[in-house]
Image (cartoon, rainbow, N blue to C red; front, side, top):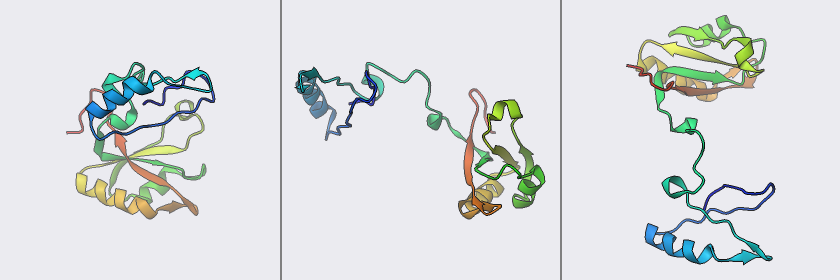
Amino acid sequence: MSSYLPQLFSSFAWLIFASEEHCDKAFEVISKQSVNGKQLTVDFCGVKSKHPPKQTDRNQQPINPLELYVSGFPASTSKDQIKVLFRSATSVTFPPAAKAKNKLFCFVKFDNVKDARAAFEKGKMLKIGGAPVDVLYARLKKGRCWC
């Protein structure tokens, strides 16, 4: 089943089966069913889907083990404050205001995986200006390698 919704405010469900064979059999049966006189829309997930996602899910992109994405901090946070929090960072980059679209985030780069990992771990409990922030590994841009 898929979360593809042909109509706004439609209901949907994910069904999980013990095997692909069981799923295929259930697909044949469920596809012929209706609820309250309306034919069910039934689809597979992944490569068998009739409605695959139009673009690659960003979560499928590999991470950059040398760069962190930091977000959720107060608007008054400066580059210098970020540098103080991540002392081993080699650079801190805030996006241009036009690209940020009121989202407060920055990228923090490190020279080695060990320093980046330590900063990532520190980020689990990090607060800036009393506000908890998110510290995640940045995703690699398409066609680029961190090595």
